[in-house]
Image 1: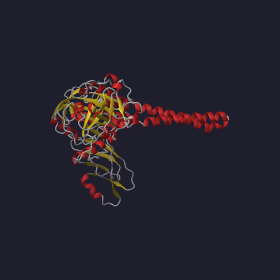
Image 2 (image 1 turned 135 degrees about the vertical axis):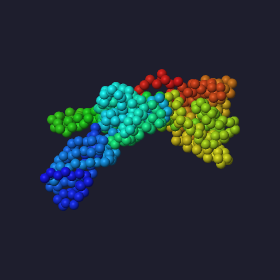
Image 3 (image 1 turned 60 degrees about the vertical axis):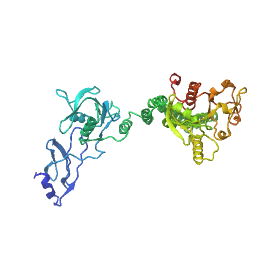
Image 4 (image 1 turned 45 degrees about the vertical axis):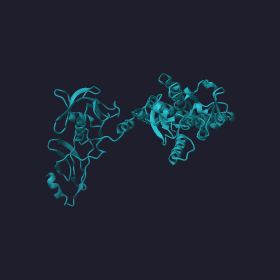
Length: 498
């Protein structure tokens, strides 16, 4: 016999040994708020079917019809459901930097984005179903109190034609702290919404097939780009340049496998010369693939340098103009300059944009023998900075190192020789103090043949005091950075290097 059990009488029936308590879980519904169904009392051996019949939002009451010990039951819930983060598939987050501005964008993505449109936006005499990919002016309101929070532009992206491949909603509101806080609180009141985890929108785009891993990395680099070189290389990665390279390698590997499998399956049908030709072809293709992979991996840490910046250490003897060069590149008085030797005691570091390239510039203490304990520590740190740098720049005072102006012989101080590298650059400063300056092509660096033989290191002559030769130095330094670390850029960089 059918009986009607209400929520208050269910607990009494639990004592009956013929029945037991079972939990019923409902899947998320993108358009309905399902109250919390605590339990349903069922006969142990009876088949059962529970169907959602009606949901009354105002009273949080619904009827479920089905068979449970031949019983028709009505359940009532007094509270909204408590869903886990895994169940709350619709996410939201502020997509623009926080702070005062004209416009801020809040993005909502997930199966309930359309219901967010209906619950959080209002406009009189306007259809409740948005036109996808078209901006509409609507009021943002509190879903519980209907209080108007802001006047905004709203656009709905119908999945899968969206960034995340899901239904996506963007609220373009005024970027005031009070407005942002009010709208975010309003979204938090919706039981099926939750704040997005860091990078979750991009993760969903990856899971939905919108982006592959190389494009995700390129997008991250593009967001983090601070210089023109970083931006251009990041755009190249985001457009799939790396993916094309890996796809080509994969095709070459498959072609190599074709020869191997052909030899295994049909080798007996081919004469000895044909077998040797197949093996040789596969071997040559494999060697080419290995060479391509090694060349790609042996990139002098270009990827890491691109993200963190080139470590460039300035070093040299005291009073050569190291701190003056540091200030010149920084375009401000970042380091103390003084004619007194030993002014710089520690390593000063700045991140700069030099010719469109990210550079972490370090100014170091003058290299010399000293009895000053503090200066000795600074000299030791200077040596470590030069050792750890990707590129080193030795600054020398031209009047002090030019042995003969007629023969243009440059003598490198003994204190500096132990810190030189094969790729060390030189700036011969204080050229204005030389009455008759020889042309650069006539300079000879004494006792430097151990690295270059008869070749000369890369060097420039300039005067940081009068700015004579400084532009030539900047152009040359940018050219060195481009050829040494960014030769893989597929863009004509000459047009934007100053």
